[in-house]
Length: 309
View 1 (cartoon, rainbow, N blue to C red):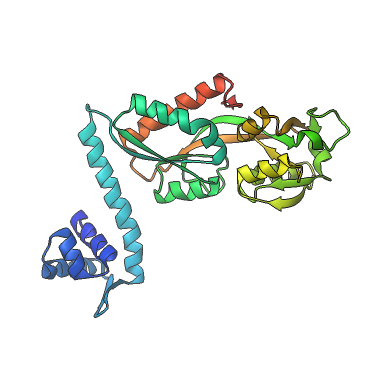
View 2 (tube, one colour):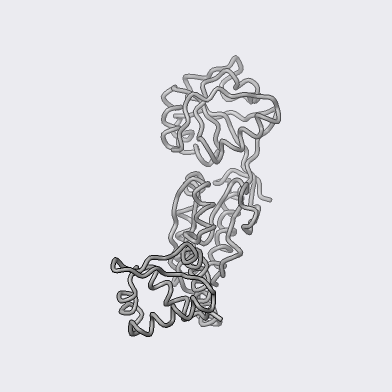
């Protein structure tokens, strides 16, 4: 059977694209390394590496093995590190993916709390649209992250943390309806307005509500950049729909005016997600718990406007 050492040797060849360079990297004689790969190929009954004067190239089967080998070796490394830390100081690196709206309210207090309560943990926060975060969690680029939509994420472990209500936003001097500025607006009343929305993420939630209630929005600009959308709306170039946390800076400065959406009220779920296929270290588990604690405190203090689940 193939063992972990052979997998590590195979990964070295895949990364170096040369058996001689891989031999130097792992500290094994080149003939010995070649024998390890030959034994793997014999045991599997498959050719994994094509050797040529230009180097060692993986076969199609070799590429498949690389993906599995990386996960296996990474899981073993995490397991060993976790066992060694038992009873000791919690340490390690944790990658965290945050959509822009979450990052605005959470990234700073979370980083400060992790630094205070878990001083040996190194938090790496990455901001991106939720679609990218979903893929990052699946491929291990980040360990945990926030998502708003679990479509195509059924294999991930998710904790439903809160629900955010969505609001309509306008420039204060460009209120488009007959109702008083800031008064509740029915979703149907937004059909004839020039809307500026993202192309994914929040857009999927909005479209889902629209389809259920027979509403078609007139989207004149699609832009996957939250700050630019807020700037366009503040300049009177259109209108948008956001969760409060995404636009509270512009509302606070008086550059945007918000109004509740009714008939129906639109809610967006917020999930904290990780990949159960990957070993979760003590550091990851600790950061996950700190994230839940900080998020709930922000909601309870009214800083993150949402309803806890």
